[in-house]
Length: 167
Ligand code: FES
Ligand code: FES
View (cartoon, rainbow, N blue to C red):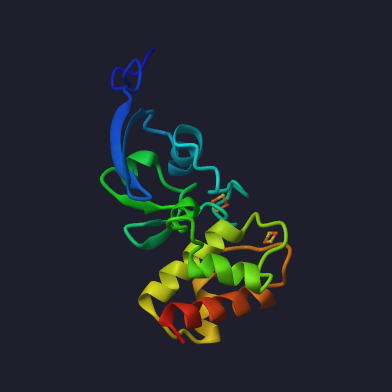
């Protein structure tokens, strides 16, 4: 016997969010993940998917300045929010100091983890201009890199901190 409390179908919902400074409105299934909205609807494929267990952090973006795993949120939970993805770091053709530092310090190999790591770095440096190594390690604890061994990532974070302070 059908459950009378269950609706015949789930209605799609409207979502409005600002991504990299641009306002977007979409109608989505309630089950759609934020990372799917970014990649499939907005073509922002710099946000990666590296697992299905909320482990790897390749999908990290900033939501209202806080690092979130966009594979672990529904798109509707970002309604009204400001999202920053890796595509929003570059300004007027100029790489962000964090992007420059990751390149200069060879803080990447395959690059799959890099967008998420850069956004976790940005969250840290926007709250703490002079983080210790321990604070840096903690800030990227949710980002897994299978290639680099992390040493050059830490060097890149240190260089980015120096450059963003203007040292
Ligand atoms: S894709 Fe791995 S934590 Fe989101
Ligand atoms: S550079 Fe390959 S996973 Fe980090």
